[in-house]
Image (cartoon, rainbow, N blue to C red; front, side, top):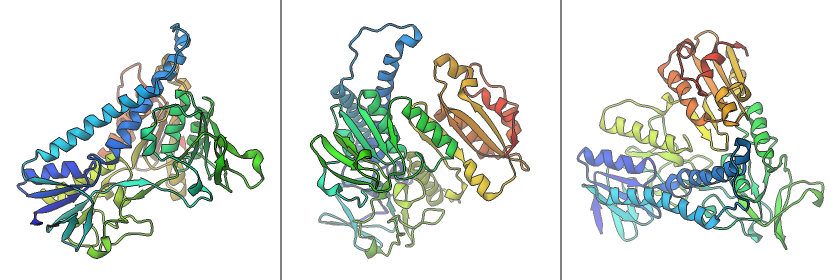
Amino acid sequence: MAASFDAIIIGTGQAGSPLAGRLTQAGMKIAVVERRYFGGTCVNTGCIPTKTLVASAEAAHRARRAADFGVQLPAGMHVDMRFVKSRKDAVSALSRVGIEKYLKGMTGCTVFEGHARFESSRQVRVGEDILSAPRIFINTGGRALIPDMPGLDTVDYRTNSTMMDVDFLPPHLAIVGGGSVSLEFAQMYRRFGSEVTVIEKGPRLAGREDPDVSDAIRDILTSEGIDVRLGAECMSVAKDREGVRVRVSCKGSDSDVVASHLLMAVGRRPNTDDLGLDKAGIATDGRGFIVVDDTLRTSVPGVWALGDCNGKGAFTHTSYNDFEIVAANVLDGGGRSVADRIPAYALYIDPPLGRAGLTETEIRARGLPALIGRRPMTRVTRAVEKGETQGFMKIIVNAESKRILGAAILGTGGDEVIHCILDVMYAGAPFTVLQRAMHIHPTVSELIPTMLGELRPL
């Protein structure tokens, strides 16, 4: 079947689905193509299911600490991993089914389930169907990067996606990688009751962060009994009678990690290699990301790339912001650009890390005139009351313009508190606006004005 539309959207992730809504509201006849799970990574293997698992792990952790707060629980507490998985599946399915119903019930939208491949810059094949449109939006997301590691093809291993199928407690989980996926799963499964070893090739965990943040993250994880191996310069894997053996050093087997299960979490790659982009003339970079400009247009007029496949961000919130930018520019005559957004994200270990703007390392490298304020969570009353005093927060401002350059809050509520800083940054206001604000007591946020009142030269 051949069919013509005003627009085609490939992928139903956090940019594709809302874009379908805006385009149909504008009176367009559109086609939406989904080859597997409606909702993309966030709904099925990313944010929603993993944070649901994190919540279960936090509940187990709180239960074990109950006596610290004067609460005595019966002996014999255990984690029911089958129930943990079923709860996660239910929460994830709620979003996935909701998105599918939303799209299939949308006036002006035709949903095609199958693998989309370009036939030309204006045509897409889905099975036996040939779809054509003057506007095509690619929102195909990404997947786990599998490195060329010696022996990896001889052992069983899991990725963030296949970990979603686990309904048992691994006796010993070895995790290769030191980024957000690795660290969240490490703490999660340690709290469920597994022995956990994190193996990182580089010198630090969370390598994109400042050294002091990375060190504090490591302290948080090791304090819970997670074994962290850094500088694993000769990594290889092999089968072992206990499961899998990971070689982490060139110096011999004394430093090998023998585990029951292996999780590979070394990064992500875009889902662009099987779309037939070459037939459309759509350019990609050396890592497979679709090359786009600051308005998310590809090298081919009339084709846009949104979300994880464009290399402009790897988060649900950046994907959704891509939708907002494209919708504003295509439908509202908006002139919006990714160049206007401030980097912001969170690492969902417990306590979480909230980040906004530049890191201290980046600011020093640029030679910007700056002032810095710091405060350990041990001096935040809210954290002390909750018995959660790990971590610290810091903020850096431009000494001349008085604008906030960046901030990191590693501590209880850090993923929420960071937004009061982020909003002031978007407003372009001087830090004194935030410094003079009256915040509620007792909160973590109330210490931000105090911290700003203690700025010193960087």
